[in-house]
Length: 252
Image (cartoon, rainbow, N blue to C red):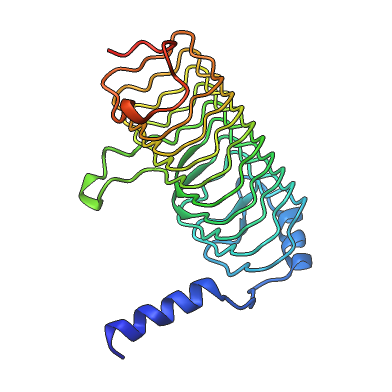
């Protein structure tokens, strides 16, 4: 099989995956009931695609590398877990508790994360076209991982993501990709946006009090009706095309 055919096969599999989970909900519920911190439920590398696992408590589970594509995990509890290298494309995590988790090297594209709690978490993931409206993202660390430059820039990708009404206070978004993101009415108080890419982003009505946008790319970004008390706009790029700033911002 030549390279082109293999690439097409992988794409077809990724976009049109069939549901063939290794376990069913009843089995997982039994495993979770018997588990504790010393003896976690072994869901490591398990295929859990398409399952309805809503409302479950996974805090005593090992989900490292598991395949959760298309699963319904709404209102489930993952607080404090390591979810590195899991696969979560098109997953439903609405209202789930993901506080203080580690999500590294994960694709979460086209996922439903409305009202999710990701506060205090460390996330390096692809979240393009996902819905995080009204999510609790306070103190989240979405900043680029500068220790893995041999692998290319490892950073959060949030292209065309819906963050409207989300709480991103004290968040680290340094070097994050936020092109065309919906940040309307978002709380970005004291957020770190160093060198973030906000090209085409809509920040209408956002609160940027104390936020640091040093070296950020702001081409065609919309800052209409934003709160800019103490906001830092140092060495920004694309300021000539920024909308809605007028004389309220101080450029350095």
